[in-house]
Amino acid sequence: MTSKEGLLFVVSAPSGAGKTTLVKLLLGCDKLVQPSVSYTTRPPRPGEQDGREYHFIDVATFTAMRGRDDFLEWAEVHGNFYGTSRRWLAERMLAGQDTLLEIDWQGAQQVRALFPQAVSVFILPPSIEELEHRLRGRGQDSEEVIRRRVAAALGEMIHVEDFDFVIINNDLQVALEELAAIVRASRLRVGTQRRRHPAVFEFLEAKKG
Image 1 (tube, rainbow, N blue to C red):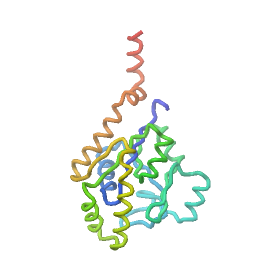
Image 2: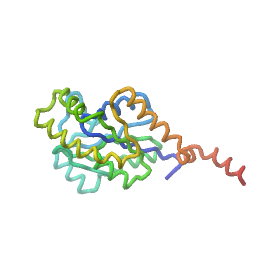
Image 3: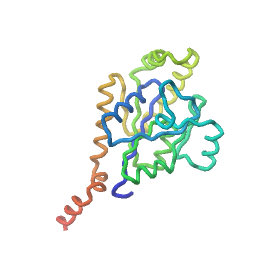
Image 4: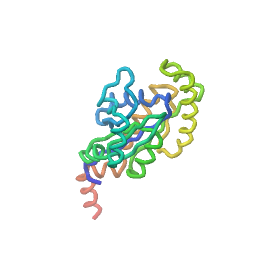
């Protein structure tokens, strides 16, 4: 790990927990964190742009990239594929850029195996009933899709203890403050400060001698 290496934040949550909204708000108030733009085979949602929210590709292209081992992690979620570019992420971190991955728990497991220093956060809804209410409030999915998403959410939420931090998103502003606090505190770890401010610690080491 170099003195310039950026921090890696991994944020996961079941659909409807508010992960995307929280991440967007965090990126708006902390310009030192930049998002990782993943690849996906799902179609763009209204307002999404290729290269901003995701790189939208077809299944054949995704399969070819996976075969070349281009992905740091990949997963199939609700019938669609998602993957993170291995080379892109490594280049960003080596350049000293703090980077945030917004991925599901399966992808988080793969990333943590390769980057054990990654800071992982899981976003929980306050209840299953509230999660279902939020999914219906989107007005984007049929009842059958909502039922599948709720069932899938239960399967995802049991992995919460695999993560470093958990935020219960009952109040959006409070949840945002908690996520921002995790990011700030991670930068203040002794190991991170030592890498980013080596002169200070070299001076202290000299004084100890």
